Figure 1 (cartoon, helix red, strand yellow):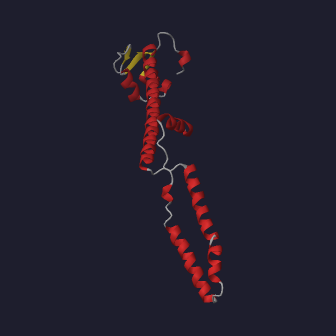
Figure 2 (cartoon, rainbow, N blue to C red; figure 1 turned 90 degrees about the vertical axis):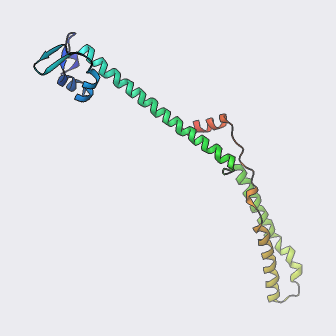
Figure 3 (cartoon, helix red, strand yellow; figure 1 turned 135 degrees about the vertical axis):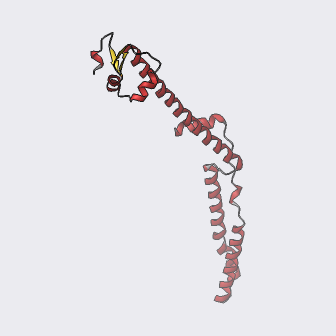
Length: 177
């Protein structure tokens, strides 16, 4: 049955409503169960199309809107949970600002480089007149001293990431969405 062929006083059986809308029998019966049939022919109940169709489609649209609203609420809750996790991690010092990390690593590697580059000038005077075994021992001792000193270098002296404001985080979350 085609909706264009419906007259103003069109009565539809449950089967015709199923065919017309594509909805299942139980769904239709649930939505229009409170309506009284306009015509009964044996076991077939006929309903007014003007009453039935708006009920079926209005409820469907409401459910779709509610479903979309629920999905949006779920997304919002997820983003809020992410934001809360970020704030907690920042407060614990588990997150480090990338610029601060880059700067600290650059300083650390510069420190290591300078320590090793200073070895020749530091040990040159000590090596004059020594045998190869003695030179090896002096170099090993100096290298071990530098490595020992570097072992105590604490990279955790990096500045902690400041706790961002709500506005900063909302801008970051908007950018990721």
